[in-house]
Image 1 (cartoon, rainbow, N blue to C red):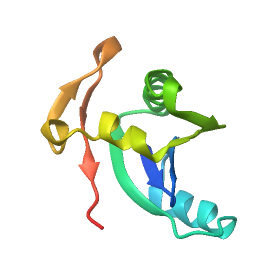
Image 2: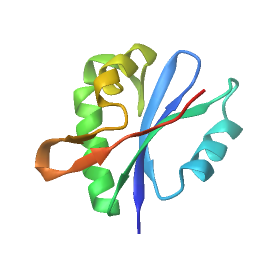
Image 3: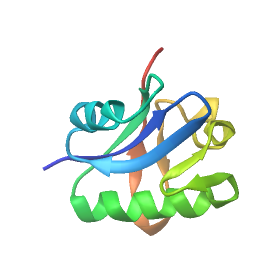
Image 4: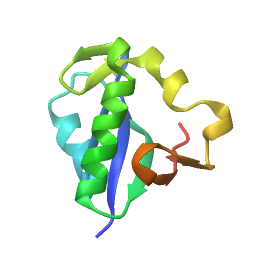
Length: 105
């Protein structure tokens, strides 16, 4: 089953997490949010284990932008979604290859 590591944007923050259904997860988060949320990107991976690993690596890389839990400063987007990586395969550590599915506003 395909899983996804996602980036969801709030007004001044982003959330990096994983799920097997990004739209359902967005709806769950939206219920408790006073601001509109939107999916910025989803990274498909082949398993839950791969999703957990990638999520942890992204959290580690974004640590300087950490706010609380799985939320990071919105300015971290420039680090994660650099223009040269959008829509292209990129290799990350531990042998994973990704193609980001970047959403349009």
